[in-house]
Image (cartoon, rainbow, N blue to C red):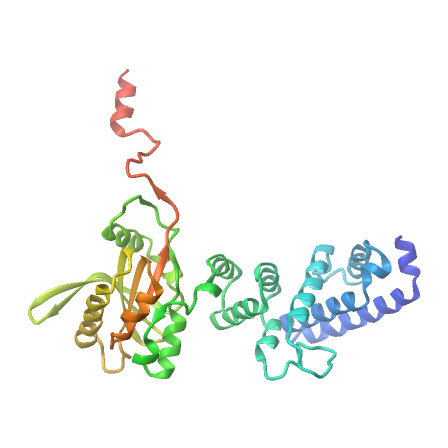
Amino acid sequence: MERLITTDTEYKEWISELKLRIRQSQIKAAVKVNTELLHLYWELGKDIVELKAEARWGTNIMSQISSDLKKEFSDMGGFSETNLRYIKRFYLFYHLNQPQVGAKSNNPIRHQVGDESYKNIFSIPWGHQKLIITKARSIDEALFYVQKTIEQGWSRNVLTNYMSARLYETEGKSISNFKNTLPAAQSDLAQQTLKDPYNFDFLTLREGYLERELEDALTDNITKFLIEMGNGFAYVGRQVRLEVGGDEFFVDLLFYHLKLRSYVVIELKTGDFQPEYIGKLGFYVSAVDHEMKHPQDNPTIGLLICKSKNNIVARYTLDTANLPIGISEYELNQLYPKDFRSTLPSIEEIENELKD
């Protein structure tokens, strides 16, 4: 089979021309390593698809291409058979999902009219790109994670975590009244900042846990909690004391958001949403505005995180609120029974066993 492929005139011409393109790409790569590499992969994937290589030269053609390129470019990685299949998938994923723009183009991604997001696929590391095209279920989701990777400088592990946590599905989904209570620029950013639902599966809690236990668990796992909250949140404190008119009040959790330039007051509820919760949270938001906010800070935002909510009831409730508030749910799927005991013996049990 290999001998037949390598003596095929059309194949020989294509593989020679491909080697030349790779040589040219290596020169350019000294300046723009990653971008040129992904452009090279795009063109290679395009060739494999448009030449219908597997149908024309047989199912082993990927192995043959890999062998030929490895021999020619022994000092250059990325030509394994597995990676060639990723390269083909890279081209197919974005090419097949791309909207039609009318005019034909040799490279539809580069020439996508008015859409910079398609160009950005060449701006992230190949390892990130493989993860995205493997796990993303739509072009919109893929481009979302491409843009986030560029904006936030995510490592591959961070990208993996956010994709596993379904950030695309949850970001900006919180029910809020921001459009009616904040200036347009801050309103949009605030909406993007909040998620619904939040995933608290990194916590270990028993069935029937109380709000204070939830708060304790979140603050004991503050690093994981901050990651779940998203980029920009800075932890200020828990049970933050506010003195209003000589009376004391305590905020469950207080954060400051660096991009919003505003305090974020969080109230936790372990049950269903109730309309009266918003009155209390609104009071805390107002108190932080008066007692803690500096002149350069933007208006304080409230976030109620509850176990479940009726979205219609939540929206109607927020229609009556004149301070910026969001309402989200949280997910917590693993709970231990109330009477759960550790499988490890107690100190007393160990001592008694040793006495025997």
